[in-house]
Each structure stands twice: as structure tokens, then as C-alpha cells.
Length: 285
Image (cartoon, rainbow, N blue to C red; front, side):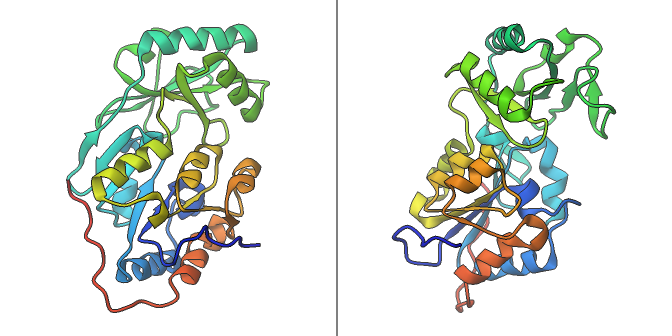
């Protein structure tokens, strides 16, 4: 059941959405209904802001395919990316020696880990150790030696374990790492280690400072534990019907799933008509 919005007159002026499992369907498309809902909120004077765990280098073509040209918060909050200009406005990278020492400590408790890294910058790539997954996906590069992972600056590390589930592994990593890095869980097999202090909330706050909006102006949508901070930062947080149980527990309401156009269903309720107002200008910073 939908909970009341926290003391905030509607509509909101910023609609912050995760991509995978939220705005996008399983085939990485945006439905016609969802596109129409985004057009509706822009006609009402609100702004759509993408906030994704994908690094900028890994989502450029995807954002282009969905006709997104404004500012995006990428890399779990580590990057502010001007999509239209194809330019990183800010980014944060991990300290290599620190994260390698932490990975070794996690492995002392858990046993051998499978690793992957996202290297820094718009030329970044996704590198994996052997066995990280049963096959190499398109665009992935195999690290022939573990040291190859650290040959370039790294924005984030992904860890997997043969026996521990994602929630267990994330909890163990959090106990080991404490505040030295941020630990989050963004999808099946995607336990991530990020620079300390980085989260979707920190990235959204940086975007807010740049664009001039407040938490109370924002409705946010997500599906995984990495979205918890964003939903709690926003004036109103919406979990998708397919969301992780912990996110649903923390959200103000639960929408239908991403396959059922849950983002559109909520936006149609929050923006029941389209006043004759110009849409918000995209941010090209």
C-alpha cells in the first residue's frame, strides 16, 4: 500500500531513477508508457535525473539509446557525468593499496574470492579474474594475472564467492572494511567496494548542489540495497515491486515491478496532468 508522502506538496521537481531493474526492463529497454511518463513530468517543469551504479564508461551508449542528454550520477555516486557533452565533471577512485589489503582480509575470513574492477575515467573498462563468471561478456577483459587488475586507477571492485550469498558476503565485507571503503550490493553477484563516503546519496547531493534542488524536491526510485541511501536522502523513496526486501522495508512506498512499468505508474499518479509550463532545461555543465 502506498504510504503518504512526507509533508511535501506534489508534484516534485526532480525524479531520480536507477536504471537496471528500475527504469529499464530486463532487455534494457524503456517502455513507451515510461517514456510518456517522463515526457509528462518534463512538461510539468520537473527534471529526470539518472542515478546509476554503472560507471559512465559503461552506460554512455545505453543513455544515448534512451535519449538521455542531461546530467547523470554514475558509478554508485562516484561520478557526475554530463551526458550531452560526454564529459566527467567529477570522479572518485579507490586507493589501490588500501583496497587490496582489505580484499586480502576478506579472503582470510571467506576463502578465495573472484574479483573484477571498473577502471577509472571515460576510457574505463571492466576487467575480471578467471572464473568471475562462466563466460566473458561483451566488453569485458580478462586479467591474465591478478596484478593486471591494478595496472590502472580503479573506480570500484566487485567481489564474488562460490559459497556465500550476496547478502552474507556484503555483511562480511562491511565488518572487515568498516569505514575504509564503502561496501554496497547492487545486484546478483555484484557486491561492490567503493571509495569511502561514496554512495548514491552522496552523488545525488552533489548533483543537487550543482543543479539547485533539495531532498524535499526529489522523488527517487530504486530496486537494490545500493539504492537505500538515495531513497532515504530523497523526500519520497519508491521501491520497485521486484526490489530487494531490505529496500522495500526502507522505502515510503512500493511500486509495481520494472517489467510492469512501475516508475510510470507512480509518476502518472504524482503528475496527473501536464500544466502549460516549459520543461526543465537539461544540464550541460
